[in-house]
Amino acid sequence: EVQLVESGGGLVRPGGSLRLSCAASGFSLSDYAMSWVRQAPGKGLEWVAGIVYSSDETYYVDSLKGRFTISRDRSKNTLYLRMNSLRADDTAVYYCAKGLAVVIGIIDYCGRGTLVTVSS
Amino acid sequence: VLTQSPATLSLSPGERATLSCRASQSVNNYLAWYQQTPGQPPRLLIYDTSKRAAGIPARFSGSGSGTEYTLTISSLEPEDFAVYYCQQRSNWPFTFGPGTKVDIK
Image (tube, rainbow over all chains, first blue to last red; front, side):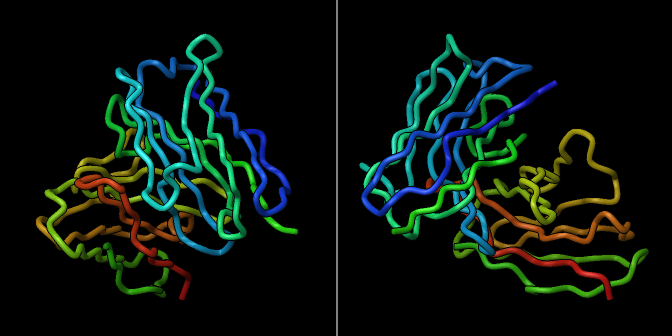
């Protein structure tokens, strides 16, 4: 059974950093495109970053480039999102998303999400 | 940019729902639909305009081309009352529409 379990969210002050983790089970992260998608409270969905399954090529929303870094540890079957210089508008539930096979642009399955709150 | 209409659709169980998604430029049929209920992550329904995801009931169907796409729910079940998002993967950054809420009339 496919499972994605996010962790690492919480309350952080503006300018701070967090690293989100997504532990995968039931499949190998190496075989799929993976992404992070976020949803601010009461708002819609926003694609944050993605990583291609084979080359580890990464994609970021322009507004986040340089602040966020997506990566994965194949040995731990875990996806990460490092977030620096956090701002109030980064407050959201962050979902780890598995691609449909190697297709990066289709979310086949999401974890339950982890809430990041940026506030002083 | 993706726009969805209507913002809210009030229907009764058993009725047909027709949701629209319009793109500011062609998305080359790379259009998906997701369903989200409160407190839950999004769930893939349809991808590449008309392909149903695994386990999705046949009452959900997608159509369209170019810049205009439609999600149809042929006969609403109680569990179908939710928010529906369209999403394009034709160009990075992949983007979602603002959503259509289907609520009970």
